[in-house]
Image: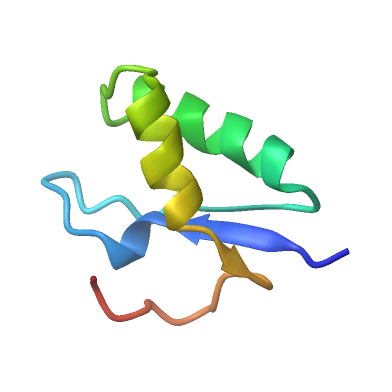
Amino acid sequence: MTRKYIDCREYPSEMHCSVALAADSEAELLEAAVQHATAVHKHADTPELRTQLKSLFHDGTPPVETPPRA
């Protein structure tokens, strides 16, 4: 099983979020990412948000250094 991650540092935001989340399963990562997006970034939990978040997943673990922004 390949670990998956999503890294807010890749995407510009007004709050300059530096959170990166990782999990052993895509389902677990998606739930954590949705919780973060709704609680911190005030997004609505919609099917579109979930699809967008899943498209931003990477294999592996987040880099220590700040990745380039998308």
